[in-house]
Length: 68
Image (cartoon, rainbow, N blue to C red; front, side, top):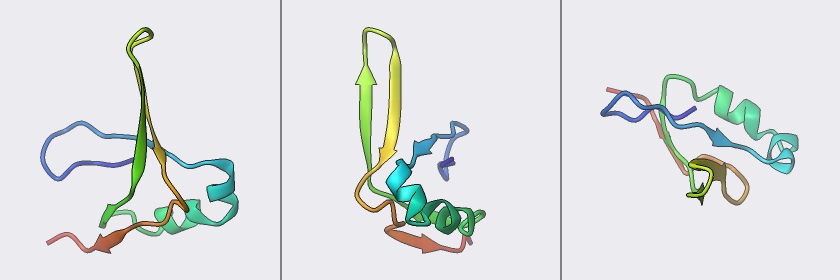
């Protein structure tokens, strides 16, 4: 779950089975309360009014910093 610094809308980014097997779920769980960045791909279906963010590549955080 991603929570933007400004605004109230949260975004859920999905990890693939391979990313979870590689330990990315634990990596991201350890970053709770910190600011982090991830590369993600966006899938949009206008017909079904649906969108989904999927973690790209290995799913590793690009950066992480403690909030001020």
